Image 1 (cartoon, rainbow, N blue to C red):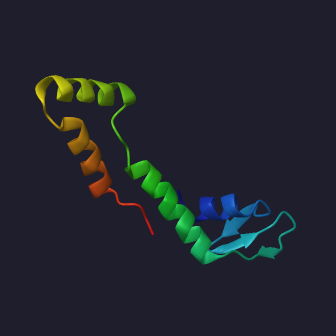
Image 2: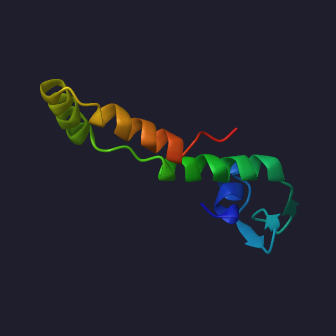
Length: 88
């Protein structure tokens, strides 16, 4: 998600951007909270980065873990979480 996309998502009045300045449909400048924009971008990036295997793959891992006495599923999920911690 770009900064401009985040600003537009947070404020429906914004219809255009020139640089870092947001404008409404009448050309009036619209203010925005930069912290909220940064938080939204981080949240969206976290959702994109923290991808788990499909449910089918996870169920298959769990089945074979039970059959073989392994921890493949648990290890895979833990690795995704470790590689992509939740933003604060």
